[in-house]
Image 1 (tube, protein in one colour):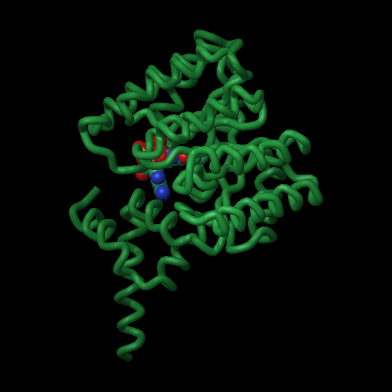
Image 2: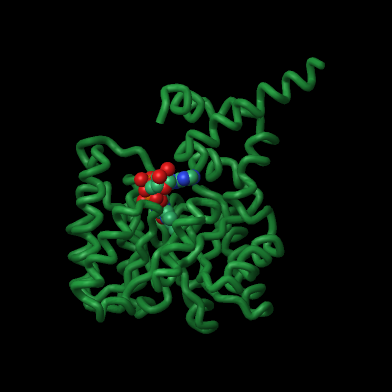
Length: 308
Ligand SMILES: Cc1cc2nc3c(=O)[nH]c(=O)nc-3n(C[C@H](O)[C@H](O)[C@H](O)COP(=O)(O)OP(=O)(O)OC[C@H]3O[C@@H](n4cnc5c(N)ncnc54)[C@H](O)[C@@H]3O)c2cc1C
C-alpha cells in the first residue's frame, strides 16, 4: 500500500458524500428493502447464500431500538413473502446494548422468537472491545433459552481473549454457530494482536477450537491464507465439511468468492442496505485504499468540472 493510498484512506471523511455514495455502490445493495432483496435474489440464483444487514449503529434510546427492531421484522416478512433465504445480521448496539443488557436481551429475544417461528437465522454481530462482555453475556443467555439453532455470534481473532471465549462457548454444550472474523475495530495492544501474522495465527487456532468442539463456523474473510487454513483443516477432517461456510462482504474480492464456491465450499454474501450507509462505507473504503484514492481523484475531477 503506497504512502499516497494510506494518506487518501485516512482523509476519507473529507470526501463529499455524493462521491462516497457513488463509490460505495459496490458495497451496499441500496437504501431500501426492495433493492436489497433484488441483490439477494440474484445472489441466490447464482448459488450463493445470503445474509442481510440493515445499516446503522449505536442506538442509545428505546424509541430508536424499537424502530430498528420493526425494520428487521419488516425484512423478515419480506423474505417470507418473496420466498428468499431468511438470514440476517444485527448489531448489539442497534438492539439496545447501550440502553441496558436486559433490554438488549429482551429485544433480541423478540426477534429470535419470530426467527424461530419462521425458520430464520439471526447473526448477533460483534462491535468494539468495550461491548464484547455485554454481547457475549446476552448471547449466552440466548443459548440458555435454547436459541442456539436460531441465533449465532461473532468472534474476533485479533482480541487476545478470543481463544478463551471460544473454548467457553464450546463447553456450554449447546448448538453453537460462530462467525469468525479478524475484527474491524482499532484496539490497543494490551488487548489485541497488532501484527497481521499473529491475527491470522490466532484465527486458525480459534477455528480449530470451534470446529473440534462441534460448532458450525462461518469463516468470514477475504484472506486466501485463512481460506487455505480452512481447506487444510477439512482435508484432515473431511467430516467437518458440513460444519463450515465462507462468508464475504458484498462487493469485495468477487473473483475469489467465485473460486471458493467453485471449490465446493458454500459461500454466504453479506448484503448491507439502508439509509445509514456512510460509516459502513467509510470503513470499507479505508480497507481498500485504492478506492479511497479514486474518491480523491473523483473529488478533484469534480472541482475541475465546476471550475470549467
Ligand atoms: C461477512 C462478514 C461479516 C463481518 N462481521 C464483522 C463483525 O461482526 N465484527 C467485526 O469486527 N468485523 C466483522 N467483519 C470484518 C472483519 O473483521 C475484517 O475486518 C474484514 O473482513 C477484513 O479482513 P479479512 O479477513 O478479509 O482480511 P484482510 O487481510 O483485511 O483482507 C484480505 C484481502 O481482501 C482485501 N479486502 C479486504 N477488505 C476489502 C475491501 N473493503 N475492498 C476491497 N478489498 C478488500 C484486502 O485488500 C486483502 O487483499 C466481517 C467480515 C465479513 C466478511
